[in-house]
Structure formats: structure tokens, C-alpha cells
Image 1 (cartoon, rainbow over the protein chains, first blue to last red):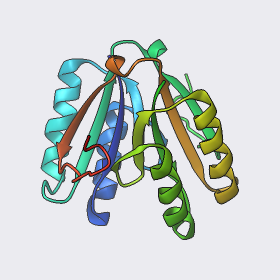
Image 2 (cartoon, helix red, strand yellow):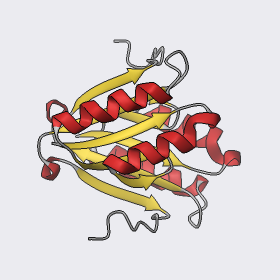
Image 3 (cartoon, chains in turn orange, blue):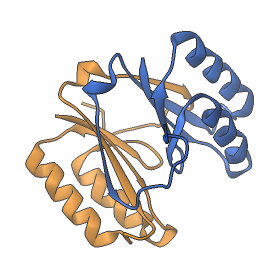
Image 4 (cartoon, each protein chain N blue to C red):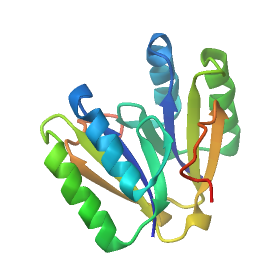
Length: 87
Length: 87
């Protein structure tokens, strides 16, 4: 399945969340990631995220779609130089 | 069409971008919005965003899908109290 993940966490936890999400997905902007992931790997990601997050203050939103082609992406302004998505 | 919009702009421009995006979409997290929007309204939003943004530094990513049902949303952690999506 194809997902977009966006986190909103306290400053102290940003570096850890970034590192975690990059292990599973492609980084496309500040706190935004996307990529193909299995249900099992997504569960792992959520489990690990919860170890980092403060559940009272932080959030992680995941949008899932069964097929990448159902999602069109458009970037206005600066496009991140992204080696992650360099295939 | 249904869109998810995420901006990453300099601090000085955050308030304006937030206000702009809220006029067109529902606010779901920090810099993340979603909602049903027409092609014409989306063009308006992008045009207005470009008046606010510094194109060298800022970005606005828009994910589009033809049908909302093609996207599943899951929130881990804190859910924003959101009057926007209160119908």
C-alpha cells in the first residue's frame, strides 16, 4: 500500500522522528514522507513512533491508499533535493 | 476532488499560510489540511499561496485524489480538536 505520513512532534523529538520515518519512507518535505509500505512494516513504524512520541502533544497522521496511481502529487515552490526518491 | 495540502514555509509566513489554507480546506494538523475542492478553487489557492510564499525557500505539496474513499486516514497520538471538520 502507498502512504503519506506527516508528523507534528515537539522540537526535542523531531530528530528521532525524522530518522525513524526515513527508515521506512521517502522524505519529501519537512515532516512529510511518502512511500510504498506493507501493513506489517507500517505497524512497526507506528509502534516505534509511539516509543518516541508524547501522546498528549504529538501526532502522526497516516493517509493510506491502495494504489499510488490514485494519488497525484504537485509541489508548489521549492522542491526538496531528495536522494531518497532517486531510484 | 479531494486533496491533502501540506506547507513548509518560513516562520514569518506561517500565520498567513494558515489563514489562507483554512479558507479553502479543513485544518487537521500543524501545517496539514484536507478537503473536497474544485479544480478552480485549488488554482485560486495555489495562486494566493504563491503571493505569500518565498519560492526559493517555501513549499506547498498537494496530494490529489478523485475520490475521498480512496484514502484512509489514521491518526496516531493526539487528535486535534477541530471545529473545521465538525459538520
